[in-house]
Image (cartoon, rainbow, N blue to C red; front, side, top):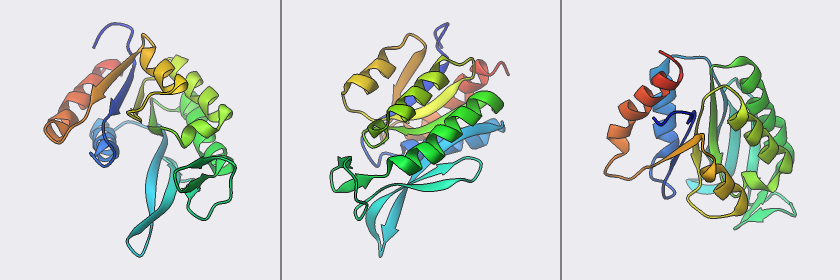
Length: 178
């Protein structure tokens, strides 16, 4: 990886397997990682929202079709309170105590919170490597993350997602000095 790039993100279309890829890489690293994942919330097989899950156990509802909020992404009301309670706290704790910061995902829902954006900035500027997913869409904040000289972006596709696990693992091991 180019010198100075310590933050690695994957991007690609929704449902391509970005989160699964990140989970597999983190499992292969055998390191104390901190941060968060997002998960679909299903009701009878139908997606009704998303949860946010800290790697050390905290959970919250990131967005839900029934959540009343002034922040909406499509049919989902974004729950900024849980985003900040779980996501911001998980990022800040990982900056302080973990060898790797996981951020899955930085996307439109997560951008409804300035506190979250600031936490992402603190993580990216910290000495701790970041492994995450970033939405494949243009907006000022996402574009600013992608433009940082310390960020590398890899595109995930159905053709490369399986071979990316060892590639990402090796890149992260290099960043971690192992």
